[in-house]
Amino acid sequence: MLKIKHIIFIFLFTLVLTSCGDFTKVLNKGTSVEQYTLATELYEEGKFNKSIQLFEKIIPAYRGKPQMERVQYMLSDAYYQSKNYLLAAYHFDRFTKNYPKSTKKEEASYLSAQCYYLSIPRSSLDQSDTITAIAAYQKFIDAYPESDKIPEANKYVNEMQLLLEQKSFDIAYQYYHTSNYKAAIIAFDNFLSDNLGTSFKEDALYYKSKASYDLAIKSVASKKEERIKEALKSIKRLEYNFSDTKYKDEIEKLRKNLKNELVQIASTTKQ
Image (cartoon, rainbow, N blue to C red):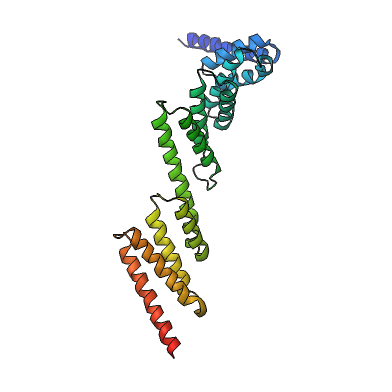
């Protein structure tokens, strides 16, 4: 039994060495036809990294030829399957531009958008990749409104828009959290004007009110009254938009303290 296992192992090991040798030989010394044939075989077998090396090598030889459409699509998909999403997106984009009449254009356009989506760094505050992905999906939606991929594309767009809103809100909140109240007020105002239908609106209005409150309470005497009135306006705006706000108890305390401060300022002025 052990002898049989040993023979099988030697056979498989030899097969692997032969296969690797064939690949290296074709890659380095094979004709473009041999490289194309092997690249296609490896791609169909799911050996994407090796197929990519061969596809990249034969591009100059097949540029302008009928086979190039298939080469470019397989190369794009090989990058996608190997999770090299940015390069996949780049090649899918080139494919759609180079072959506008291809039966694969719709699929390539969608996969390009998906690649941008999959390459988004989830923990980063840099929003540029997310914006690029949204634009790619929107381009697909506009080009193929009847596609069965539209519901999925819309789902990803909504998800990324929410991600952008969350990141923008987090930046404004960070200003508040670090006691940079002036910057927080401006950031929350910008957030609210840029995201009119946002689900973070109530929270943004509350923390803008809190920032306005803290700025007013800690102000020098010459600026205190004006800033208290601005803080009261912020609270009023929150209540106008959310009459039954979840922050009702908190803002009542803020308003009470602000009005007490106004009373003290008035009494000091009279003296």
